[in-house]
Image (cartoon, rainbow, N blue to C red; front, side, top):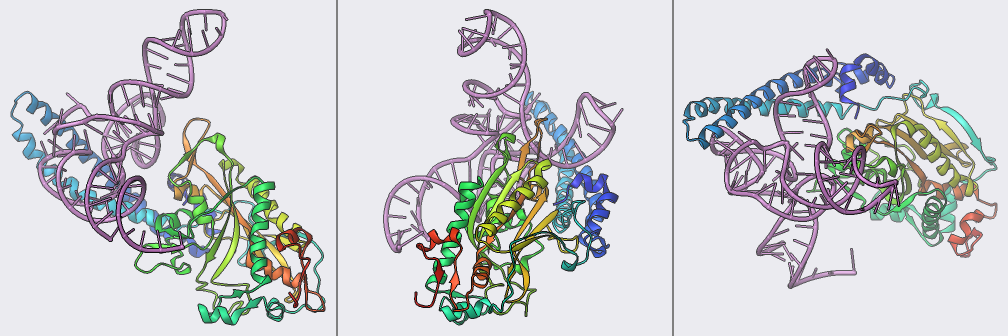
Length: 428
RNA sequence: GGAGAGAUGUCUGAGUGGUUGAAGGAGCACGCCUGGAAAGCGUGUGUACUCGUAAGGGUACCGAGGGUUCGAAUCCCUCUCUCUCCGCCA
């Protein structure tokens, strides 16, 4: 959520910043436009209400005093009956206006960081660096490799749940589990993240805290008859571990890594990546989350991005780092780096990790604060990123490790997690 | 799922419907005392919104939401969560 006070006092500057995401974002009928109209009215109503409440409190005290000394207070009591009625009326109106205003604010995207490059879509993203040697020597698609090895079964996934679900068998399942362990160990032992294990279901407040709700309900699976949702990323439960808390400045940075399954309806992705494991309704991911002091957010983003890159390097997967442009940066993020892994069968780099700084946007929504040097609490800054998406990592390993005989070479770092195996082949 | 108990500030723990932001204690901060410390003494110590250049006002908040009342932490209703016992279960 953007800062309420700044919304009023620095309106023009904020509007310009928000408009970088597209002019429709600040249109009159947008959340931005509604919030502006509602802000004034909301405060007028509140002022009126508070004046009435003040009067009520004063006279009620007076009545108490008079009664305790045995004086007659019937005149005051009659007067207050009327004031009370008006308070009740106004209270309803003022609360509704306030709720409407907050509702609009919750649908306004984060302000972009000044360093985010301008652009309408992913074509304008800026490549920052590359690592590794991409191969392009006729590697088949991962689904062909995996099905030939008997470790990927998309038909079974479709039978059990529908399209965009898959089943892993044998070394496929083992590889998924190995990646999860490997990544968690790396982040917990070497990069200083405390591992947490959290629920894969979250309530509405939690989903609102990190920005998935109210605006993106269509992307979420909701449990029937309950106000609960399947999480689309571990960012949701892990960040909200601290909702409504005031943290000690000395306890920052808070760093957590977590494995969770992730569930996404992929409502707007019909027809995209329909084959294979790239885009699934359920996938596994190890997530990195940091809570930091606001002035450290961008440094923390670099730090966290490096931790995600370390996974790709350890797995010997060629990748590049891309800075997302203004039109491609997500709703809650102020700045995002995508890590894209090389997929030789497609001859392209595909997103395998997204690392974002949210500034104080999520801190405000989830009411996570830190006590500053002046002793005053302020919203904490959050940074998170995939470290990494496991399904896509498995895909990248199959393709990049593929050999002419159909077997797949495993990187050295992963072999201990695979019972010492150096490759996956048909006879296993 | 059934029965019961509970939810108050950083913590602990009081609170009879009337000047309660909320006793007492602990903690924390500052000061006094001390060669230094402990103890002791004194003072202070919530969050949010809002008005104001400021000093300083105002309002809300005792799990959440409603209700009764001139006035609710206190009475009533609903919900959530926690604990205990029973049932069920990996």
